Image (cartoon, rainbow, N blue to C red; front, top):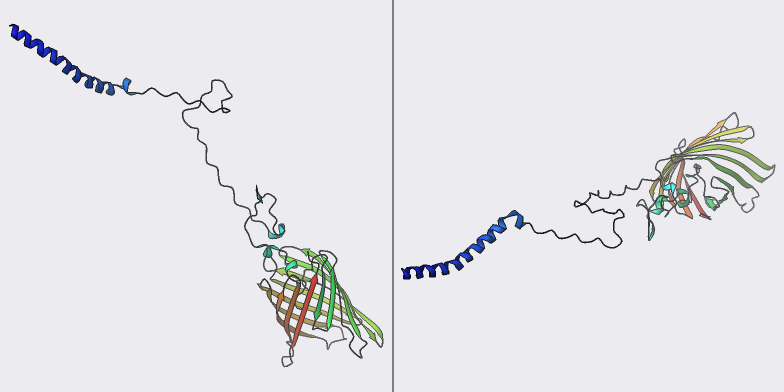
Amino acid sequence: MNLRAAYFVLLLVGFVPLRRARAEPQAGSAASASPSSSVAAPNPPAPPPEGTQPSTPGYTEPSTPVYVPPPSAPPPYPSYAPSAYPPNTPPRDAPLTDAGPVVPPGPSPSLLRDHRYADAHVDRVVLLPTGETHPEGTLYFSSYEIVVLQAGYALSDRTQVTLTGMPPLRNETVLPFDLSLKTVLVRAPEFRVAALGSVSGISGTEIGTGVVGRAGGVVQLCLEWTCRSSVSLGSSVVLAGPAIFVGNAAGVVVYASPHISVLLEVDEAIPIGTFGNEFNGIAVAPGVRFSGEHFALDIAFAHRLDVLEGPGVPFLAATYRVGTK
């Protein structure tokens, strides 16, 4: 009995630590499974930086971030007429940066420039005037067929005056001259309208000086927004005493490159009345133009359509100008 009791006590003493060791993991697993013991204590929110404290007492930052829509892309630049802005000048509402205003992409400044500044022969086709004038303050000198000289000046941006003459040759005392005034009445993106008036005469003859008057107008239709390609239609009346002549002309300028254009002009002379009936006919003059800001050269070949067997006449016209802004 005593041996059995002592053995039971030894077993009891050795079992209790083993049971405790086995019970501790079970208690730990039970604790991990317990909802109350699995939730960790929340960390206190970090205090906001200095200078960002809410102005309202008791305000707390919401746990859910407030949705802020992404910034929308800036609207594209509106298209603008090249003539509305001088070259290298940004629109009035262009955004500003550290480097200056932003200029929207577009055609090169040379194409945006007014056609009158880029072509020294902007005021005519071959002989037919167009509906444009040289820029204000331009002084220009021209030569027709080398022997006919011309000088002109743009009084304003719409009006120019031109003096044409031929120096007297040896043993010749006759001096022809022509004084013309041209004014642009309408200058629109699609067309131009100009009025012309001139006084032509011959001095040094046996009867003194003879003068005739001429008045007319021209309409120029632009085929593109730069008006480098255009169609001009003109008509004029020549009052030469008892003889009256009506001159009609049509001319086309086709832009080929910044310095080359193709020309075509048709001229018609119609006498009215009984005097000067022999001065009539139709002539056509195709040609090519080499032009720049200060110098231009036209090479054409004129031929009468009512006299097909007759020879054609080569035509040369050159202009040099200064003072364009």
